[in-house]
Image 1: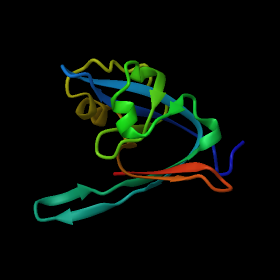
Image 2: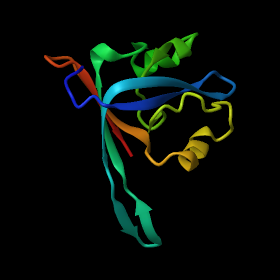
Image 3: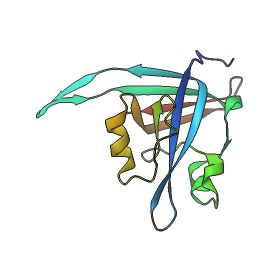
Length: 138
């Protein structure tokens, strides 16, 4: 058991561009804390979704070696690692590792399949007494 309310499972999808096409590599993160704030903004053309999420991941419970985004982008075998890249990677509540990541427009497809799906918008890493990541999603 970690430092937070580690009772959720999420699937992280790392985007990797191999020079020819976009690929998505899933990582199942268990015993994480996911706090979702439901909301709606009223825009000129109607109501828009403004759900946000904060994902807390214990550094000691990572299933793969973490690499910073630029280091990850240069890997020959990205499926062996994980990262949190703002504006590219996303996570979804639950185990979505069985999804066909070869689909075109994969993120758009996933948004139609899952309610709690979030594009990463911020990443903070704390390496103090409680080493962890705080990943913001929108």
